Length: 450
Image (tube, rainbow, N blue to C red):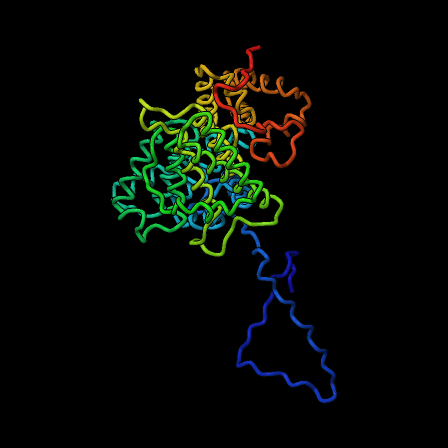
């Protein structure tokens, strides 16, 4: 008997001999056992009480922030955006198996969370803590001569962080290191690289090329000649609009890049329709196998086509300004609308600044505004959202010129007109696409400066 007042410890019965089956008494009715409910294999497992990570947080507060960031990455960045290269849901599982990659991923998630919420503290110091730890582990591995997949993916995150923040020198250092590591590992076709890592590498290579104003380091592994495989067959209405756009550009510039710009418009429309289907849950960006064509493969093909529009390989013979500004604006659209990255990235501000500088020095700006009002209105509104405060007034001025000529004042009419470039068949109230004979530079009516 317990006389201390404390609760008695729970007692368990332990068997002391072989287990014998208990026979039922004759004449006694046994109650049938209810059937077991089938377990739905789709139901998620119970969440763990602590963060699943390759290291142990030192304090409860650190563990809380870590679990919050993991939740943001898994439930928002992975499940609700198109930022991750495909297959989207395999990245966290790959990161938790590698210390360097995990810390780099958490630091990147910190930056994304700050962009989306505007909260710098305490995530600013969390960002630097995890980034610093990832750099320490990576440097230690490089000194040991290790070139594994986790190290490569961690450096890729460093490179695209510096690219998105418009740090060309730092981005170049990381890309130079990646080129050496890939070469030491046997090239991109090495069995040490999974399909995910290859796509990750192509993704950052294109972003770094924008900041450095160079060609990408790595050649694509996809067939860029069969665009229908990635953009799907266009509808008759889309084909008519795409062909008309290319003809207008060629009539105005006489450049063979007109066909390239038309193919870019084809890609913009096709992939935008896919994104709309994803948002409506009528389609999914995920596939059964990593070797299948992923949504990010389609975006990569489009971005490689766009690169040829803005990149000036020979400064002595640059392409027409209409192609450069179209290319820069397409990049903003790709990274914000098709890759779901924040509009406030410094890279987007840099691209908007390039559009402003190109148009500001263009002697025939008013001719462009009158000949391609649909294209220029789309560019001005998109760049105006991404631009820094010092660049916004010029872009707003050009927008005002086009709207005054079209007599558009209502916000809904302006939004409808801004979509006319991509979707003229949707019936904007004031169509901006020229009807009838295509204008040439000698037959347009210039818009006078206000």
